[in-house]
Image (cartoon, rainbow, N blue to C red; front, side):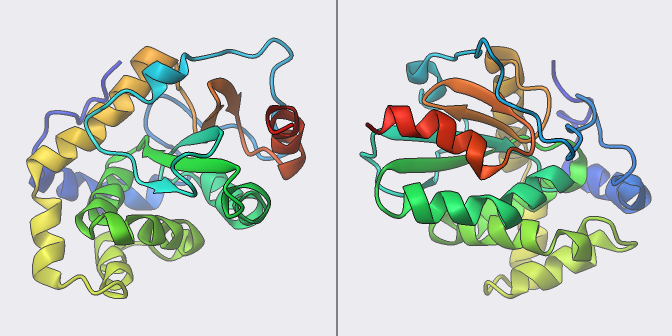
Length: 230
């Protein structure tokens, strides 16, 4: 399942973004709405598994790993930059995961792009254009400051102000958003997740291959992680 905008040049996408961005909060693009935040979606009783070798196979974009590369457990998140549930996870749950598991070297964390709309595609492109050493910090800012750029009348101007904080110039900003190859790579990352791993909402996690969906509390991760780390 490929999104309708996959083959459109980004100049045209920006025009669409400027027209529809204020409505993104009410109507995310296909594959459909993200899970409701309350109550949290629990891990399924019969977990869906994806082979870890397939999950970790080289793809269109290189992974940017947080934590020890040789950590015994791998946590992959597919997220959209404009997903409010993804932002809530990164604000409320990820700090605890980082403190308990990622920083001590028990878990390596990988966030992969799964944009639900053109604006999210552009935001992820800008994070990639900043370089691998800044990519994760910009993604963090996209989530923590989501309300200031994702659901405003002039999202492109707001994104420019956000990435300027990382040292990106306006020229680099404009060049990045016109990079058709990068846009295709972000889209391919999304398509691969949908087609190979049945990702159809955000956030979706794979914990050593076990699929978990929704804005999950730290307790749900604890229940799966603790047996893996004994």
